[in-house]
Structures are given as structure tokens and as C-alpha cells.
Image (cartoon, rainbow, N blue to C red; front, top):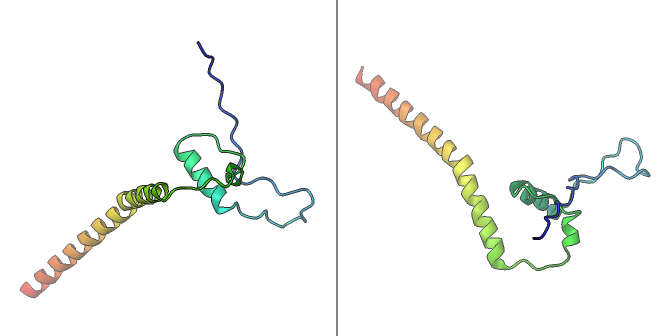
Length: 105
């Protein structure tokens, strides 16, 4: 029976600035690759690799990009757009009811 190995420790998203950096100068923001790698790792509850750039120059297929885009848009629609549209629709209906009531008097 194989013995499971523990997952590697997660690496912080933003490393500490180098010792040679002048005081008060902020570290540069993480690259877009590192930011997306951190989001994916958090979503999948996986440890973060040392750097997204360290994965090499592996090409991501168009199908994978389309799948990721579709999933992001689905989540945005469910958690952001839908509540906004519902709130706006409710407000418009209330305003129209008030307008009709005022015209009736």
C-alpha cells in the first residue's frame, strides 16, 4: 500500500521586497500569471506553486481558455449580474406603481 505524501507548502503571493530595496519602496505587484495561479490555487484549495512563470512555456489550448472564460462569466452572472438586475427591476416596478398611483389621484 503506497504511503501518501503531504502536499508541498504554499508560497506567499507577494514575496518580501529584497534587502537591497530602499525603505518605503513597495515591491512590484505580482505578474498576471502569478495572480491567476493564486486564484486558481485558492479556488481548488491547492498549494500555490513557486511562480506561475515557473510552469514553463506550456501552451494553453484555446479550448482550455474558452472553458475558463465560460466558467468565470457564469460565476459573474450568478453572483454579480443577477442580483443587480433583480434590484433594478424591483426599483423600476415600484417607481411605475407609484407613478400610476399618482396619476389616479
